[in-house]
Length: 351
Image (tube, rainbow, N blue to C red):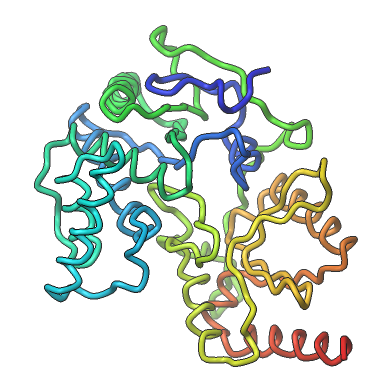
C-alpha cells in the first residue's frame, strides 16, 4: 500500500477507493499528503470548456484563501490604491525568492482586493494556481481530487480525461479521479492508503427535507455551501472561507468579550499514535469544541466517524457542542447564547 506521498503528481490516475472514504481520510490532511482540493466534475462540451471551468473554480478558491498564500498581507483589505500597491509589492517580493511567476502572483494579489477576471493565459494560470493553493496549506505539492459523476456519457468522459491530462501537465498537479468508472486505458488505477476505519464509506447522503404548510416533506433547496464546484480544506486559525455558517458565527462571536481564546480549524491528536482530529472551533483552556455540521454529516460513514471522534475528545475531557449550519444561519442568537452559557459555566467550575 503506497503512502500519500507516493501517489503520482503531474499525471492523471484513478483511485481504487470510494471518494467519500478518501475525503474522510484526508480530513485533516495527513502529514505526507499534498494539499488536496476536490473538483465536482460536470459534463463539458470540450477540453477548453473543462479547463476553463476548473481554472475558474481554482481561481475562486485562491481568492477566498487570500492572504494565506501571501505572507505579510494579513490585515490588508479593500480595493484602495494604497492597498493594491502594497499587496502587489509583497507578491513581487515573494516571487523573487520562490518559484512563483511574478506577474501572475501580482495580478492575483490585486484581484484578491479588487475582483475582476484574469488577463493571463490558461497555461500560466494553471501553473500559478496550483502553486498558490499548495502554498495556502503549507505544502509543496497539490492534488486535485476529481469526483466523477455516474451520468457522464462516453464523449463527456473522453473530454474529462483529456482535460484532466491538460491540467496535470500544465499545472504540475496530481489529478486523482474517483467515483464512476471511466473505462479508459489512458488512466491507471492506483491503490490508496486508507485506514481500515474508512472501509465501507460511501453510502449516499440523504436528501435534507423540510415540511410545507400541509405537513408534506419537500427537499431543502441546495445552497452554494451544500453543493460547491470545488471543495478545499480550511486554513488553521481561520473560519473556512467557503462556509457561510463558520464566517457568520465568527462575525457574531467577534463582539463578545467572553468568546476570547477561540481558535478555528485546529488539529488535535488524542494520543501519540492516534489519528489526528480536525475541530471546527476550539476553546483549548475550557476544553470546549464546537462543530458545525453541513448535510454531508448525515451520510452514514461520516455520521459514524463524527460519533467516534466525539468519544475520543470526551475521553480527553472535551465537551463537544454540535450545531447544524442551518441552526447557525437561521437561529444565531440561540447558538451564541448556548456556547456562551457553556463557557461561563466551565469557567466558574474551574474557579
